[in-house]
Image (cartoon, rainbow, N blue to C red):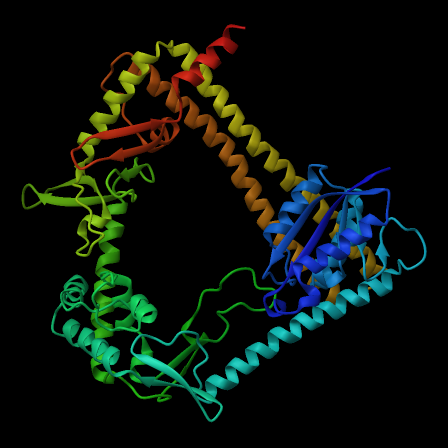
Length: 541
């Protein structure tokens, strides 16, 4: 039997300078192992660079497992167990349960482990011991990093990366301390004073541009506070102004999230509560008086809440049928929907929508000359273009409807494939949970370890069940969308005015709409006459 092998190599962030564990070295060791066997052939190499071994949510690893499920490979080779993973429970689960279930041979070269070998060095106790050591090492590193950061912060040391605009960092007596910069510090003070005087963020941006003051990004790259000859001047963004106006660093305080950064076995970012934030006051010289800072922060909070309520009000009225479809023909950026409310009487106001390029509001060299286009005018253009396209294609309604249903079946096929993968993974988890229970009942593991493993598997299983439910709902949505589109096609073919466009129909029929400043519109459809010609031939047969 010839084994189709995939080599897996991983390098974590904290080991990127260790030459002996480099990606190339790991792959070379595995290839040398394959060269000594006449029963193994290399199919593909899978790599993850800068990825932790404490979880298995890695692009290269997931791609490899997809190839396992599709029978592209049936043998996995790694340099050692730590390159495969540092999570003892998950690593053991793959080696003892999942790989045997898929009839996959697993080889760890330097550990002398080969799951296909029935005797010799395949000591499961030794394997599990190594996996436990790998996990403890990863846990110890994570705890040490957190402890060091906390200790430095409590000593008043700056633990961040690039200092906030207006400050520079220097090492003094083993501590990293922030010191104000004169020119950028003056800019920060000016921003606070302008906002306190009633300037809006847009007006502050205009002021900074008129005085040729570089954004923080250009300041860091050029070293110049003011734009000099030959340099490109860019306008500041709203988010940069808002960040400066709410950053506690400007009153001499350092803020660190207690548990918000990556933590051991954490899946993604965590929501942060006020009691999870560490604030050390008076760690460096302040740029802004505290009374001014809190007065400005309060005003900024009120403006943000008003803007949020306004966006929320507009979002509650009608879907954006052209979302992610419209692009500017002049600069290529995605167009943005703008809502205006014009009062007709003291009780009634009329809400209208239009689309325009967000770069039309810029004041720097990136300003776009495109104009706004009303949604009603856009609806008419799209409807007429679709009607013309259908007429020119010479395709019967029945052919188009059948083609659309065929396309829906292809989409559902992909969705069903993912459903089967999820169901198989759930079955694997059920088998593993049963195995863990047997180990607990026979005394191989204690109750605490059993409950810990059971809890972890139940979380994974719950997430998979939710995804499965979404996939099943997606199939129903595909069917509903296909029928809605077909109904609309029949109506517009007859020239009926009640053929209203909605989001699902637009995204089914249209790929992209480009709008130019002379109101010229180019539409790219999800279908073409060539596609229909091929389909008509197949349909006749």
